[in-house]
Length: 216
Image (tube, rainbow, N blue to C red; front, side):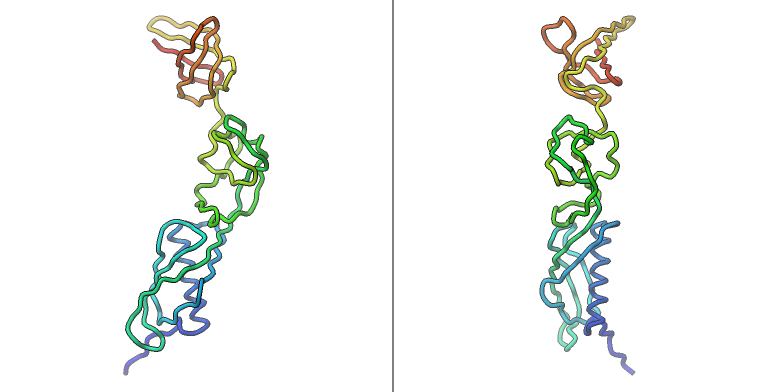
């Protein structure tokens, strides 16, 4: 006895199960853990018998394409169709309460938690900064924009125009004086320093909080 192929995609309940499969494919393919994904088909769903599903593209956008392969419910040869979806992907994120500038503490930009659509912003969840305590900005930002990992850095150990200890080291010699740092820096960064009494700056390596080293 011949058994008829499953036709779960050929009725209303089957369409719902198809949408659930597409949702799973999108979440897995785009690494959307912790995201509330909303997919709305643009146009009617094709009536296919148990179609295979493949996500087209690996970037989260406000429009997603899915490839469906299957046999039409009313018979005929197998078909391959591309179905487009309007995508919204909601995620809780830190956003800037006010505009910020480079070399400024992130706290001064008054970050707050909001629910944003990362698909509309073409962002991945991994782009968003999660822990923000003690961070500083490395670029200018605008109010209402999400706080991104690439925009922040640890608190600099030396600040621009701050007076720091300048340690000069050589074999058998260690001198210490003071100077003014010309730009902020993290541990290991090379920064220009104007030593007291000097007419031009020299390059030094940030070695600690308020301290730079010059090696000869």
